[in-house]
Length: 191
Image 1: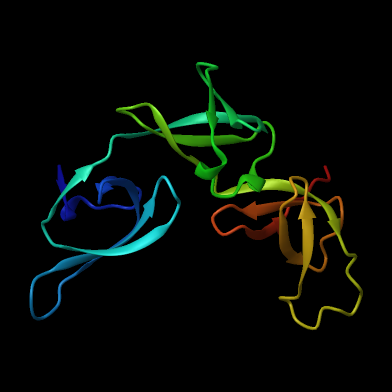
Image 2: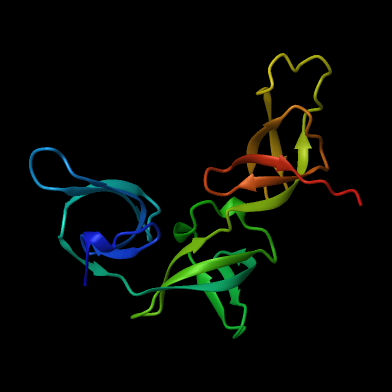
């Protein structure tokens, strides 16, 4: 058991009979009335983010969640297959437990969150950013840069489509932010 005083980002809790992780929290002490904690909670099974307010001092059940490093192998009709980095044990996860399957590419390192009591996989967690190759994008036209925020669509090696700046060309390696699935920067591949 824990209380709202123990809240911190990334803490796993049991709320309404399901597993959540605290994405964001804020202790509020109004001039009138009791203190409370405003939170954003991410459901580990569905990926949905909800907002909830807890009264200060309320007891909360902590979830027994383990995050284990895995390497993505491949996917088929049974699901997505991963291998544990240390034990080489393989686990298959259904597509519904992966927020954005098109972010996965062979050999990629991820963390899989397991319910430690039942050994059930809950979700696949990506690193903050990943590098991917642009397989197709329209060439940027000189003079089309009236503003520095001009973007164009690009298709990446996994089939994912995102918006990239006009100077990105087919064959470029770019960094993609996995939290909001957006372009971060071009990776310099010249040595």
